[in-house]
Length: 55
Image 1 (cartoon, rainbow, N blue to C red):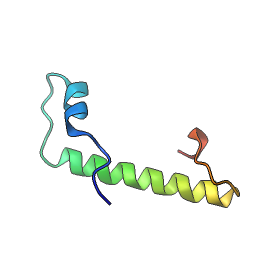
Image 2 (cartoon, one colour):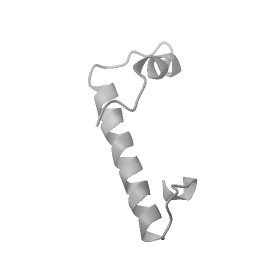
Image 3 (tube, rainbow, N blue to C red):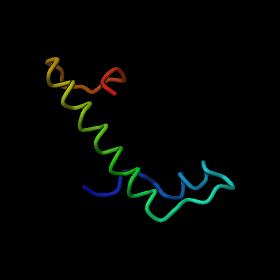
């Protein structure tokens, strides 16, 4: 899957803290995993909508 994370927004949020080259890729993979698990939970509960409680 492509990038889910907007690098410039992450850098803005981090402010004066530097963002390592591998951080965005790791954050993107983690985000993809969280979304995939939320989808699985929604399906297990017979829903076609992911909700906050699925995270």
